[in-house]
Image (tube, rainbow, N blue to C red; front, side):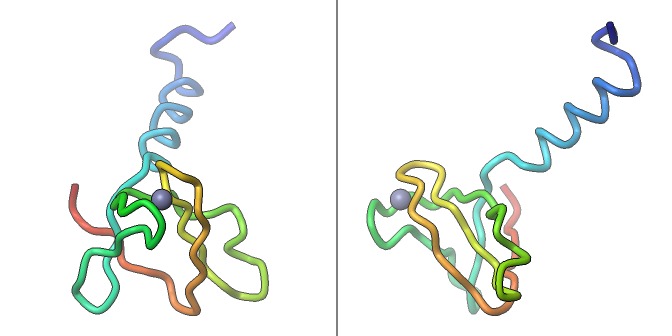
Length: 75
Ligand SMILES: [Zn+2]
């Protein structure tokens, strides 16, 4: 059983941190969910699907598709 400071748990925590919802920008504008207006998204699990990139709204889970990967903004 890994302890809280084991390399495995540190890697898991780093991955969780990296997958936290964050803000994304399109053409220098903060992208907001067209349904609920929330501005934090997770990069979707469908990134390989048809070569498209997805942002999943952290609030309502609406999925938005992009041909190019939207830029992550500073928190
Ligand atoms: Zn939303």
